[in-house]
Image (cartoon, rainbow, N blue to C red; front, side, top):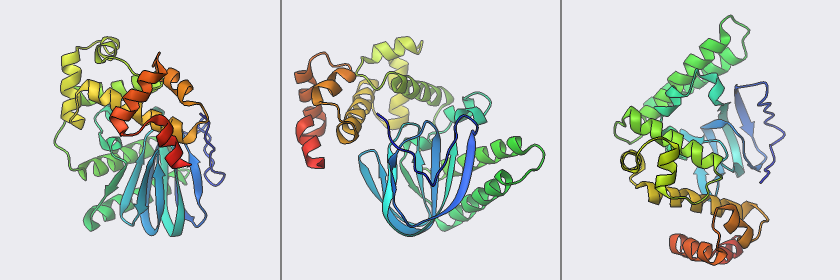
Length: 270
């Protein structure tokens, strides 16, 4: 599936691992996706933000958190003023820091006035550093970005999560992404992650309140909905793409999880 990149947001991922812009958008941004992480901090304005198959009202003092591969865009905007920030794994040494973060489990986070002042100031400092030519610029940006992500993490209504669970969760999501979210047994993913199904279940219960089987089915359904909405493949082609050898079973599986058949789901979107 190929989604367009908006011309007003020119990312060169081969040359940049970080970018930040203070934006004023009046025109809609068509749905698109990137291989990087993105943060949209709304300072002011109104509109509708799209993330995969979900629609969200744009409000000030809110953060949209976009992980790699998520389809997103916005329209119906009015006086939209926001910070747009993107980064990829290479800005950090290794992936241990991101493995401790659970903020990208959320699509949208609302922050209170006290939190928004700190977060907005950090965005502003990051933009100033990004536009500068000072020495140790890359190190400073990496450090400031870590601080920003920690501030956002602290706004989340979640309990403390163990490092082991966070690491397993991040590795599972990376593995499912590489596997195109094909349906698979928890034991298959546990084997590839060199862990037990029991530990994988415990990690997912701790983070998302689902066991491994429930979470894998959820991610497969989420990908099926994306494909049905944005990809011209037939329902049968989508079934095989997601690892279902029997398209009739895929249809029953989808209807059980979503409440309607894949064909009906697609028809409601047209």
